[in-house]
Image (cartoon, rainbow, N blue to C red; front, side, top):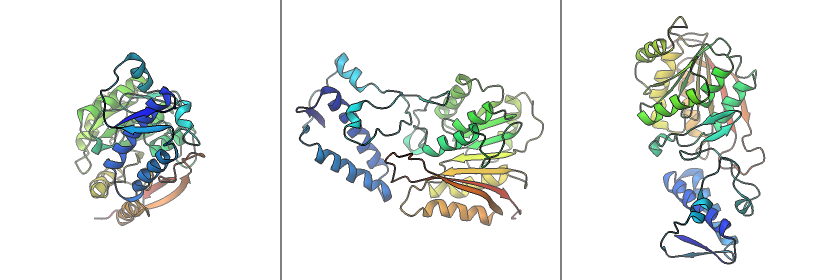
Length: 320
């Protein structure tokens, strides 16, 4: 589908074409639940601005330099043409072609299968990493600690821990070469290689190879295999993975001294998916020590995501 401006500017038409394509892909990929609202919003926007934008059947793609420049991703806020359609520009969370610059970090994204959802730096990851950098009492100190992150993606929380003086940081994600390589790139690019390492880990698998590989990669600078802190950001949205993730979490948090920090959003209508995982943590002997709901939107229109929920847990009893 091609957008033709009548009489909108060429820049606005180009941005709308990009936005419409990405929005439709997102709705198709995540259809159901609150994401149905995205389709409703898109139709409403297009209806309101139908006087400025007319849809035509597909035509040959304009491959001129001017067209390519208009569609080139930006690391900053989207230009004013998009803001003209909304009260404000959507948050930039990066993509495989557009690294995200955030609080002094450059976060590259992996062109991994969309089923892994590692093509953006998600809101929960940004909030968790920011809490670490701010030295927030909710997360607690990370200096001198041994940290493991599950489902790290771009590994922003792991990088934040390394920058804040953690002794050992192990960023893990699904054993996809593209994902692991991307974490390695982010660790090196952000000068965190002395304390941090990227390793593959499939939830539910034994953590012994993970601990041994971390010990070798970090030159055995840290004694012991246990972790003081286990983190995970936006990893609860897929209920099918809950039990495997819970297995890894229990194996990593083997004693009452390990802090587990979860940051997540509700990607369904009533938050039932995340609540189901939290019920599993209770069954496994974990107790919530502290919690906070962080307003991610900061005035932006993110109502179909809602707050980022941060929960700090500790294992009070072992369950056979």
